[in-house]
Image (cartoon, rainbow, N blue to C red; front, side, top):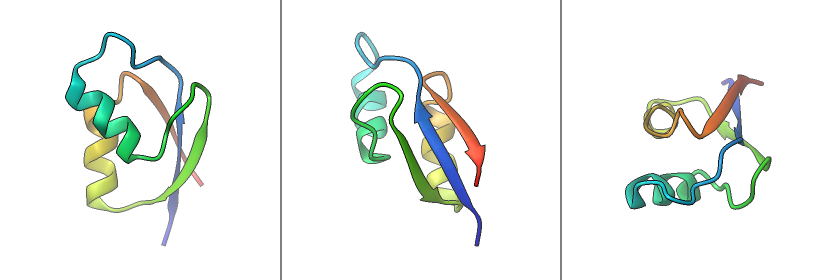
Length: 59
């Protein structure tokens, strides 16, 4: 199964509170932090919701 590399590239300051919680749920706490997550429907949906804050690469 493939993985996704998700990197926080924009600050969550001033974002909608729901988006802040989504970024935190993805495991991202600091700017330019990268996490590897499984490529499934749940992860894709979360990334889609905050696509303006993160950069996604296939790993």
